[in-house]
Length: 260
Image (cartoon, rainbow, N blue to C red; front, side):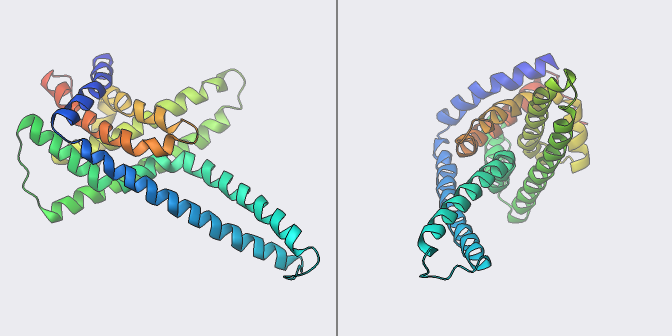
């Protein structure tokens, strides 16, 4: 496991060099544009929710438009709901932004993992729309599954954290679990090309925890950064999936990998 951890961590430096050398840096533009779209959607959604909540509140208390206190109360209520909605949205996105970004980027990550293997091993995969759709669907399925499992584990660990002294370890376990499942998502693109079923891929990850944890650690750290973690997640995902592909084949070449 120690050797796998080492390979996984060092793969990030190799991935950055691999991306530059093989002129794949343009792929970072895709997360950039997705971030812009998500920002516009979030701002528009927050505005619409705020307007709706404000109108509901004012109607509930019978404050008619143009009344004596309408403008003052309306402005206060609007800002109250705006702040609350933004805060709640941020809290929710903080926990699901990693999985959400992996779901949105699944077509890009599927392509990039395959492209990395083509350059690294010379394995040629002629484009097949049906297979590509299957790859993307599997990526979405894995990311959704892992996000749900992470949330369930986090709820359990929040309860566990109430236990004196022992509960102090909860943040550490939360981080390790997050890193494991993020690494699972990145590595599974390679597992799919090896024709491992979902059940076999799950077994593969359990046998190669060091590789999964080390590959998902950087992404997990970035997600934890307040305010900007979700923005940076897409860029890190591009590097992570390349690092995952490189690390799997390096571990395989060094006979450190259990495929099944």
